[in-house]
Amino acid sequence: MHIRFTKMQGAGNDFVVLDETRGALGLSKAQYRWLADRHFGVGADQILTVRPSPGPGLDFEYIIHNADGGEVEHCGNGARCFVRYVRDKGLTDRNPVRVKVQQGELSLRLNDDGRVTVDMGPPTFELGRIPFNSQDLDPQTRGAWEQWPLQLTTDRQVLVSVLSMGNPHAVMLVDDVDTAPVREWGPQIENHPRFPARVNAGFLQVVDRSHVRLRVFERGTGETLACGTGACAAVVAGIRLGLLDNEVDVQTHGGVLTIAWQDDATHTAPVLMTGPATTVFEGEVDVPDVD
Ligand SMILES: N[C@H](CCC[C@H](N)C(=O)O)C(=O)O
Figure 1 (cartoon, rainbow, N blue to C red):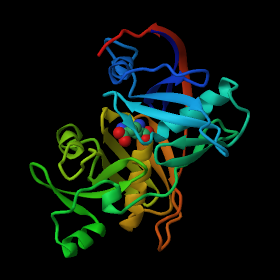
Figure 2: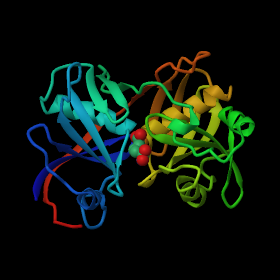
Figure 3: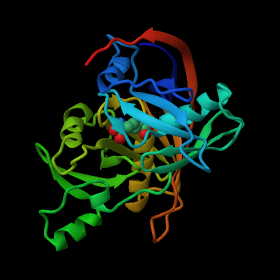
Figure 4: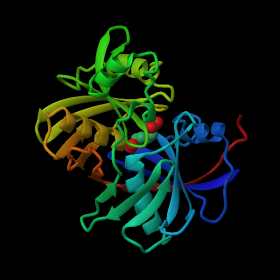
């Protein structure tokens, strides 16, 4: 199948963007995986698809597939590229743009300085909705685990704060992200049996109350240069642990994301993420009928 695509990146998290506003491409999981493949395909962390509005009050539907071909609930860096794409392609002149994702709706605003601010919605802490499997735990232990951080047994005991930004995250505090065992522990946490849908594993170094460093071993992709939902999850965890103020610059290998969360006793305030979104090149390719 011959397709056109746009290559984009947000803080080094890179994407192939597909336009299905004039008709569905009907790609298979294997074809998404091929598009993401950095040797046999185009190469990307995720594949983003723009689809027509699914209903009133919404401008588009936003679909995300990981490099392993699996469809997922959310991609924060991708959301910033999404609004850059639909505006640059003349698919809308609205600002902000409202899009439907699996778990809800997002508002995406292109700022005058070229950065993009996304209202990522509120975090979710209820273990069953992350999802985090705690059925075998007695209610008292389970209740305690709701209070964070949770003990995970990998090849050693690790403490993680678990939450959802629409997609699942486990955030672990480390002294130095440069020496953190991301490649060793990332896959163990990603595939831990406590996470029936797997999980994105964040490694968070607190520099001061408004600056952190972060590496994320992403579910279905591996370590990326930046993870937008991971930056949101890490800052939310840091604020709830009393380590961070309510606006934080997150230094990733690919750039800086600014995350703001005005937490209160209900923990239901929306998380705002601001960062870059860049078009790298336009392309077209014959996607093979892989399976
Ligand atoms: N790997 C993530 C999806 C992409 C998230 C990340 N690229 C972002 O910017 O939020 C997951 O499986 O939930």
